Structures are given as structure tokens and as C-alpha cells.
Image (cartoon, rainbow, N blue to C red; front, side, top):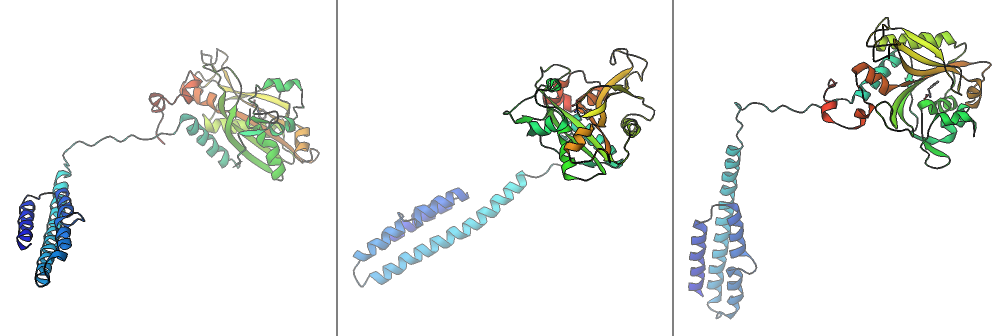
Length: 342
Ligand code: PHE
């Protein structure tokens, strides 16, 4: 048995000399110290040794075990240190290499303009409210004076989820909600997504954004509406931009308006963008209908108000000379990269 111990010792010395990596070291640990290794075998064999030899042999086996353990542990330490050193050398930074250009994220052009609009209106005294994109027929139509079966409902081609629930067709669904939750004076804007079941073309899409504005107080007049919208447009575009108001019909305002601005391209002198009219349509607006105020729990004898709904995609298109509304939803990085990083 003693010679066997020595053989194992020699074999280990040989393996140990050729151990240069922590992976080999691990396999040596298993080979010699593992459950199926020779040390364990020796231990088991000890039972068969004669009584007088046993303590001596036991000691030799144990010495061998302890020395293997110690050697492997020490080698392990130095191998790890060496391997770390090698890794550090390999990872050495070469500061003479040219830098890598990092990709810089940008705001989507629609969000950029939305933020600009929101900031201007906040500075003018409005606060921001949010309404649900998925809403009921009640808030999108009924409370806004579109009675069931009223022909005005055909004006909006709607995505219905069921008879009662739909994707909102305009941000005006916020109007009755704010009237229910706030008391006049109310001065809010509600930016958000809208959906209409329309054919997708270069000029119209099923998905777009609006910014609704609602102002309700005592003696809010038609001139407040015109003045506020003109002031806002001049802040958004340029100081002396002209704003024009036409009569238009929306069941929730009376009178109702279409709002045009001077063409951003030709400033009113006529070009292909404005089809030689000098004007561009940008919003629907009007004085809130007394029925809508009543529906929202506000006394129309005491209060009056105005509202407008500004279409955002069209504004962004006009501002940037974009010819196709579909570009906004196609996520083409070549398109998106053309807008300044904010
Ligand atoms: N909600 C109308 C639309 O989507 C716009 C509008 C808003 C008109 C507020 C009048 C008042 O076309």
C-alpha cells in the first residue's frame, strides 16, 4: 500500500507540473480529491490493512491528501492572478483608436410639435388633462349633442369595439369629463391619440393626434376664442401670421368654426401647398353648445366657453414639408433621423 501511495504521489507531481490553467486545475481536483479518486480508494483500502500498519498508512494517506490540497489551492491562486493579468493586458485600451459615433435618439416629429404646442399653451394659462383613448359612445358622441341616429354621427367613421365602447374619434371626449370633475373657471388642454375608420392615404390616416382646448368661465366670448387662437398660432409659427375663421358645423359648438392660417410656405401669396388659396386648414373650434354645458352640469345661463380641436399631423407636415402622413407610423429611421435631436 505504501508503494501505491508513492505512485499516486508521483502521478500527481507529473500532472501538477503540466497544469497551466484553472480549467485543468479543476479537473485535477476532481481526479485526485473527488469521490471516485485514488485518495478515496486508499481510504477504503485502509480497512484491509493490518492493525499495526494502519495508523502509519493512515497518516501517509492523509499527508498526501493535505499536500495535494495545499498545492492545488496555491496553484489556483497564482493561476487566477495570472489569468486576470492576461485578461487586463488583452483588454488594454488603445487611446489612439478613433472614437465610435454613438447613435443619438430623437423625438418623433409628432411628439416634438406636441411638446412645443403644450409648452406654449401652458405658458398661456392652460393645464394639461388626459382622456382615455378607448371610450364610451356616451363621452365621444352622446354627451356632445350627437343624439343616437343623428345624421351628424355619420361625420365620424368610428372603430367600435362593441355597441357602447369605441376608439375615440376626437379629443373632444375630454369635454364632458372635465366639466364633471372641475368647476369653472376651467382652462384645460388635452393632447392625445384619435382613431377614425378611414382609408389610409398620403393625406389621411386611421391614427392621428389632436390637442383639445376648453375654456369655460363667466363671459367667455367669441372674441376670446379668436384672440386666444390667433395669439397661440403666432407663438407657434411667426409673429404676424394671419388666422382666418369660417363657419363650420359641429354638433357640440354653436357657432362652429373652421380655423385656417396663412400658408406657411408662401405666407398667403398662393402656392401649390395651399392650392393657391393662401390658407391652410388647421383646426375645428367654436363656442361650447349650451346643451353640452348642461350635460356637463354647468349652467349655460351663468357660464359660457369655447373649445377647439387642433390636428397635429397636418401641422407637422406643413411645418416640415412632409408630403405623406404614413411616414409618421412607418418607423423608417432615415425619415426620423431628419428631425433635430431634442
Ligand atoms: N372634435 C372636432 C373634430 O375632431 C374638432 C372640434 C373640437 C370642433 C372642438 C369644435 C370644438 O373635428
